[in-house]
Structures are given as C-alpha cells and as structure tokens.
Amino acid sequence: MTDLTFHVQQFVPGCEGEELAQRQSLLVARDYAADLRGKVHSRTALEHAADAHEMAGAFVFSDASPDQLKIALAYCRNLVHAAFLADHLEGEAAR
Image 1 (cartoon, rainbow, N blue to C red):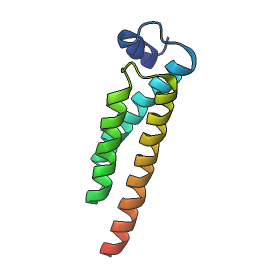
Image 2: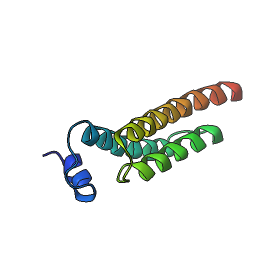
Image 3: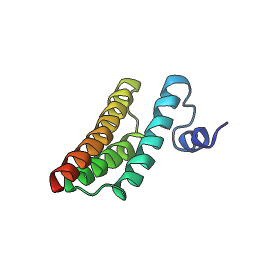
Image 4: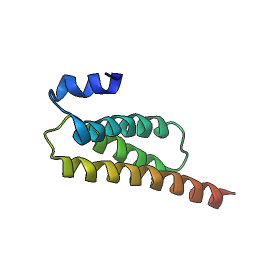
C-alpha cells in the first residue's frame, strides 16, 4: 500500500481501482498546485493555481462519482497548464 493509498482510504474506505487512482491523482494535483502558487509571478497564474488547489481539495475525499472525479482531475490539470501559460505570457510582456 502506497502512502497515497493510505491517505485516500483513511477518508474513503474501500476505494479501489480506477477511483483510487483518480483520488491519488487529485492528491498529487492538489499538492502540485499548492507548490505552484509559490513559484508563479503573474496574478492570473496565481489565481489559476489557487483554483486548481481548491478544486482538487474539494473533490479528493468527497462522495463524487468516478465520472465527476475524472472531470475534476482534468479541470485541475488544465488550470495548472493555464497557470504555466499565463505566467509565461505575462512574464514575456513585462520584458
């Protein structure tokens, strides 16, 4: 059992398979978005990272269906990607 499996199953007992993988990925996305908040410089990028962190946190241990988890994960990943793009664009504009 991995550490992430342990954390998920503490709050969602009996979670297995694809649902477990999605919840683990949401934990990773949440932590990554939190870390990103300290690394970006643009306001837009910061807002995207904060939104990704909040969304992942709201869904990771919720009673959401596997389909909802899949959508929430895609949403978070896209927000993180948007944060990188915004930070790059706004950084280029400042030069």
